[in-house]
Amino acid sequence: MRLWFCLVALLVILLPARSHAFRYFTPPVGWAPDHGPVTYKVNPASYPGVGWDPTLNLVHSAFRAWESAMWGRVRLTYGGSTTASGFDQDNQSTVSFNDADNILGCLTYARTQYRHSTSATFQVESETFYKLIEADLMFNNDEFVCFDWDSPEAVDGPACPATRNMDLQTVAMHEVGHFIGLGHSSDASATMYGSAETCDRSQSTLDSDDIAGGRTIYAPPGNAALRKSYTVTTNGADDARQFSDGDLTDGSLVYTGSASDACAGWQNNTYSQLMEIRIRIDLGELCRVTKIRYNMGNVQRAESWNADLMISPFGQSPTAHGTPNQGAWTEQTGSLVTSPVYS
Image: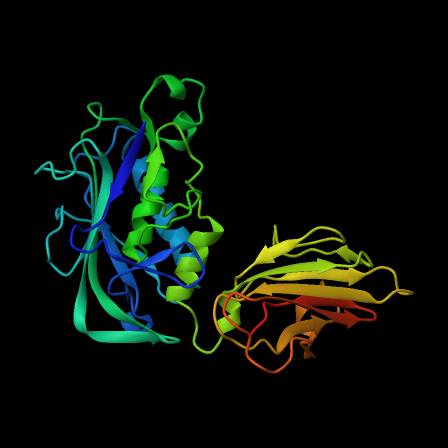
């Protein structure tokens, strides 16, 4: 069974966010970097049948995942329980499970409603975002009538196809995406796609499109290319070394990412052969990529690394919207750690 997510009724016109499938609201909104920590409170009344502790943990994990996708520029902080529910304009952001007025009916899992300033804004590159004041999430409490809220473990279980089990984690992740300012994505694999199936957890973790959306709204100033998708490959004269899980490529493997704090690590193990690092960047806007940052030294002793720059072969002139670029850097010996490209 496929049900639909619901946004604020008067705020469903969406803007395409450059070349990605994610969308902003109209007008674009977000939590300003100078806002300080954004506090959300949870009303325990009518919590789903999975239990209070599992429910709260899944809500927290959704906020943590999106906080990471926002470069950590805005902190999403749990403020404890509250008796507030629904969409009260009370200058506090809440999560509740009691749809007392039956606003959602049987066709909608949850709804997020927000309020933003009509004058206070912040700028991200050429885009103006209105500052959010509060955002409220309300989950459908027609449990056992329309569908059954369930834990990820139950949704993954063999009995799920015979039930109407809906993954609470999937819906929480989706609604927190609205909480930070994202609309519905046109990418059906994205968490922010406008609908989801029961007995399906494929949208329970953030897709690359979701992450790109969060990192575009909350991008650090002056680093346009950091938010673009890039792919790193090597020529095989290398050996992967110990860095963060998932951040490595070895020879023919490909590493793709767009995080400012991600690293891809190699060590040259064929000293008779130059190790080549090749980076492909799919630019979603006009920008100039001139260099990458790297470190050389003992991979086990980060404090001994010597930071330096390798100049990009992309040239100094701006590159047109959507143009893929590919270029190579070479290093003769030692270990190489790349950070994402920046302009």
